[in-house]
Length: 425
Image 1 (tube, rainbow, N blue to C red):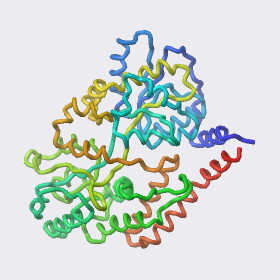
Image 2: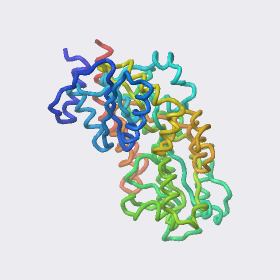
Image 3: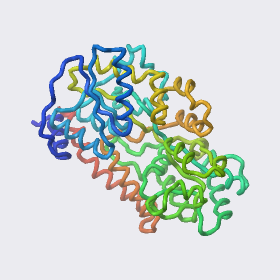
């Protein structure tokens, strides 16, 4: 009988073409580190500082672009050439855990003097726990908040951002009346699934049911979310467009095409750089409003993981501990602008005095992970497509929810088979 690892190995092999190379053998004092994104350039600098403390350890850093990282990691898994250490997007952790590719870190973290788990934002740390075990240490965090034009909000009669959906709806309506037919209240790009995901995570119901076996999109909570989302387009508050149909979000935000925008921390630097001097005091950030009060948002970012086959786990953990130090995270933030996952780093960094970062600090205490299943990103895209059909008038909310549940159940069919098979064996 084919076991679970063999099945998943076959799936990984189908997902990517073979590299045609084998893993170079190295000693227990050598760590191979794959760093994804621009952070790879900074990681090389941080590693040099680590090596001054630990000259007995050799580290090889390889930089991967985000666009190719997932395929290369699956290829390396199939070819048994994964590195010792890697930065993984939080939503990828369940996938590689299902492949038995990740080392549980519970014991090492509990014994560590450097990795203080109670110092991490709970929702971010929880995104690294799958089936009760810790598989990653948060490296940098990402969540979504509201960016808004506070000058236009004040002109519409409001002195503070919304805390509830009802308050937000009142503001959106007032802004639309203020700016007229050619401008809007909020931008919700139809090619992005994160805004709808953030709103859906504010509801108490899970997006998947029965341990991630089936969709739960016919629930009253998700239907309420989709109705609220679609109503912003129906009432003319949001334009029916993608973010590729406008010049760029920063210029249009400055021109007043829209007054609210849901986005992550990287846009603080972009808005400060791209908006003209006369508008630098005209915008601000705010935590997400919720159905009945301050709302949750997405628990995103990237985490450091140790792959299971690593022969250098003590040395790899030593590097992970170093990169997890509060002072090193502060340095990492200064070099990249990526927000740190530890509360102590926020207290000691320039983030503590940034008016734009304050909303993120508040929001990080109220973040929630999307469903921890390997298939989540496919499901999220189907959720986006279902919402777009409602917005374009092709389907009703009820029809979209039924169809989305049906499609989700199809996507999760293999997961159900594997889970049932594991229980039998």
